[in-house]
Length: 112
Picture (cartoon, one colour):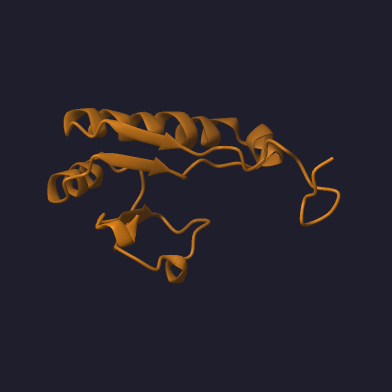
């Protein structure tokens, strides 16, 4: 995408992320719970597409702390969607399969 002229912005609280892995575009330190920050980012940049990678995915932790997972994975995503709607950013790609498949028997995973 970057090579095709798209400008990228990564917003991350760095709870599980690593800033040094962001190779292109702008970096904004922040969280989806911060609606004021979301509004300022969408106001500053002409965002038309959002790729959402911010879900918490630990099954064990989600059982221990369901409110934490509800807030992050639902409520804070809803914050993002509401701000997207406000700024007419109509494309939303949601990735959330990190824990769906369990631990592989071997890596790389082979076709069976």
